[in-house]
Length: 158
Image (cartoon, rainbow, N blue to C red; front, side):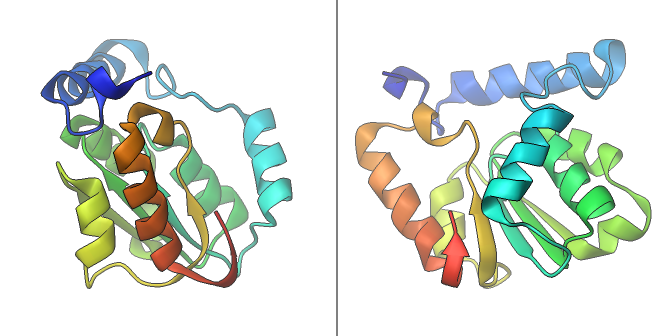
């Protein structure tokens, strides 16, 4: 049970901000990436993500998936919601150039509420929450899944 480290926990936010700092200044951008190219390829195939896809990701971390989706797959639109400003800054460094215009990065200490209420977020063909839902309390998982499903187009993939 990860509820003591629920996503709004200041300790969790502080951990990710410190991890982002060390990654940026000492370890390199890939140091805290939980995904590798093989994992990403399997996920892309299983979810049928293509250049026509629009993607919302809850908890994008250091931006590995965002970079792969924007620069290698060429998705039409990517929006991400993250509670750590440090990780948001790492992702902004990682993804640049032309890809940056097809990306929206959003920071919130209450990411589920942002997903539910934001007018900036659209309807998406794919919604990702990799390694995030297990950090939520049991009651927040239901709210998070409901909010994510509310942003998904008919026939989309969660």
